[in-house]
Image (cartoon, rainbow, N blue to C red; front, side, top):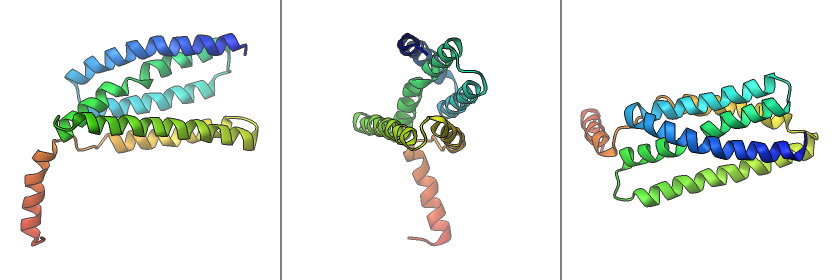
Length: 167
């Protein structure tokens, strides 16, 4: 594909990032943030499957860019809401900073690993395939998350410890 397709895809991703983040942020104010986050992970995986299943064309690439743009940064309002709910707001800046940093480290590792796969195999195919179980695992881990505040969990843990005789 011509380089202009890549440039257009980046533009579509950026535009759709704004829309997706805004919409999912509003949804997160009314519905379960943990379940929405799990669904975003599942939808990302479905978008990758769809892109791999169709011929790679300018149109399919731009459609994939739109889907990923809608889903990419839409996790930000959900993750920040969950961090605030679970850990409270006293140390929110530090905790969310750590979450954001870990996402950047993950992005770096994903990019470098994609490059390594390309160097070893001459293509990105195996890297795309690895993304599928990663996406499903993210969905499966996120769906049952306990998103109650830590303070609400402490009495239950203390009660369990008393009943079992643990210290």
